[in-house]
Image (cartoon, rainbow, N blue to C red):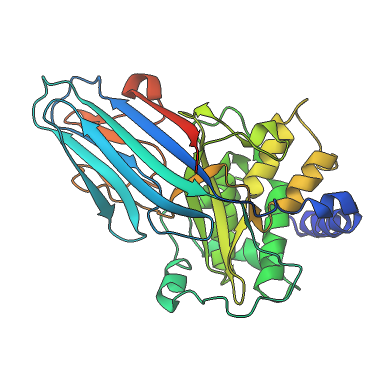
Length: 366
């Protein structure tokens, strides 16, 4: 990375933040509203004629949090298929695993998940609130480790050190990384699915384009390389945005509404939600499209998404290098889509029409 370009960018970030109007600052986070209930239905049908069919379906995060609770899943399986809830080693990644012993039988499964969510905000403009529970040391160590696609050494460490130089404290350093990611990445509509998140490639090739699993993985890797515990949060949009952003919501047919978010840990505040990828999504997709960083909608989203998530989205897990129990193949980078395989190989989880699967979401009365 060219140092002169880096320094010019750093100054531009400071100027942009200082110039944010009060109206944008007032929109820095959605107000924490009451709980909303949803039902998510996943219908999967394996058309591939191969034998030894197995599929793995992510389900909503089962541990209650301040922003998501009460997740319960039920399922129906055809053709004598065997289904059970399983957990991948590490990261607490839960999924429904299904297998069919008979290749001639219909291979269909329907999973119904119910859960409640409410908007999430951590107010970083105030001192840390008293009594915030501290995350366990073991968990924090886990979310400092490198993964196959999120290394923390080499060019990742060098870039993180450049970005955070002169910033003190985890919040200030995480904010510097967030602003750098917003300024330097680009959302690319042609990227398949949500992207891959190969951070070393992105930095080495100076190819900082992609979608949420690329852009937010970059934030997570840079934070970990800076000694800040951070993690991706893989999930699915389940409702339209109530904040006026057409690009940041999806209702009804949510088959292609997967979305990866991110968090970092700061003493006193706990886990802090961020989403630089959605700032870039607003820029690309919010009408009329191709908005500049100076646009009022973009500026408001940029401020809001450092410290807040609108919970028209459900979290699945925080997993990387996920081992699918019983698979004949290696781990997957993350579990955000239905995955499957037959004796002939893995099914294309990014091609719901051929796989095939359909996800639908609807609100429920609480």
